[in-house]
Length: 128
Image (cartoon, rainbow, N blue to C red; front, side, top):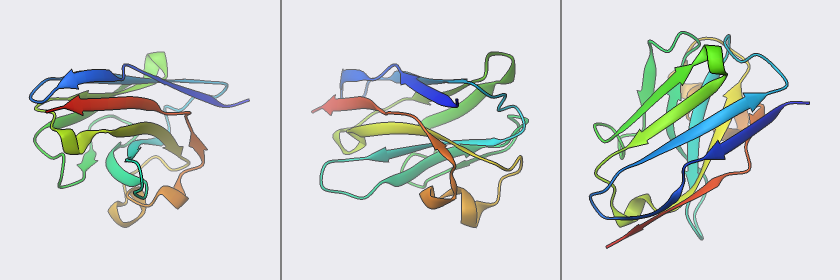
């Protein structure tokens, strides 16, 4: 059974940093794209970042580019999201997800419907 478990969320002041982790089990995800999405109250789930199987190629939403960094450790079946310069607009539940394809395809990567497995989410709250 495939399971994704996010951790690292919490409460942080504006300007601060958090590092989210997503540990995968039940399957080896080294050949698949992994992504992060977020959903704020009353809003639709939105794309944050994605990374290809190798960890070399990444893709970011414009709203987080230059502040967030996605990375992965295939030996640990884990993907990370380093979030710096956080602001209150970043407050949301953050989800990791897996797409059954090894390469990034931007028109697909940002579409949550194209991901096959999801974690339960971790809350990130940024106070002003």
